[in-house]
Image 1: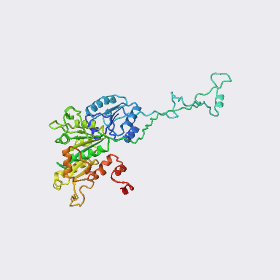
Image 2: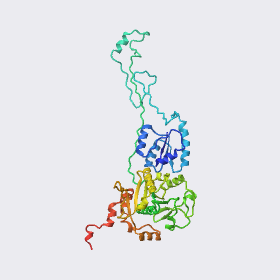
Image 3: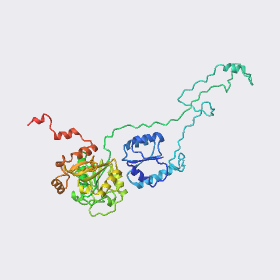
Length: 434
């Protein structure tokens, strides 16, 4: 039985789409499900372990203790296909595997236990158990003495009948060794992949991706956040931050050279570069970027279902408060289909919010976006100054973005509330000092 511990179930299905053999374990999302599966089925033959799988280091140590070969998945689907072809042949040729033509087949050998009354030619002795002396049942001596013997022997020798002897046998039942896994609290942040998509043009997806990137970089060590510009949209980051040549995009050589600015790793789309984007190749590149705590993708207006959105942990859907666009039936249908498809990881952000906006269903008299995060209308002068300087928005918009920070970003990165409060509030005795 082969075991694939992959970060995302969609990637797990993509690896197995060209694989038609049977001995593959089901998808296991976390360590607890892995422990349950191992208790029911035992150790696998080989393991393909994703470095982004939750608590992969503990799973690796578990398999290494049991001498199970482990291969790491780095995001390349060709390497995963070669691994499947190599190990599936060895599993099919194994005597423990019996292919019955449908479904996963496993051969589990149960210990053969003979009943106590059945005769056995072989008696397994346990060297750690002390042997007990043979004891005769009461009346055995009288039975033997009253019976005539065929061959006369000396009077001092008393023969013992073979059928009347009682022998205690020790039957060993092999028991599977229990699996112990230490429960450790992770001290480091797990890699998080976030896509920012706009419901229509000029909704503010690019600006929101810059705001999220700036806030995360302020609360993490330098170069902990990567901002990627989707190559399927017009380039903006390259001219915004005035990046200089030479710069190599990942579509040119497969790896690319990210540029750093203000403690953030940028992967901007190169102007004039027209290369057809392969979705699987794009997913492989994002897998390499997940070595850092946060990876932000400015996805533009690509709302169609894709492997990139499936790979994301969180999806920020940005739409502004323009009632003329909200009234378009096609956009409303695409929004509801997208949210239904990726339910559970979609966060709606209402950009350019003002106190005069009331998005209420006229028939049901209910809020159209009850759980949306509201980002108010920012002063054009502040945004324009940041554009001319080629920098992020400064602290002057911190109060306007407080709802975004408190309801969303503070859940991703633990922030010390006492430390943040001490910057804005004075102590009790400090208020009376001149």
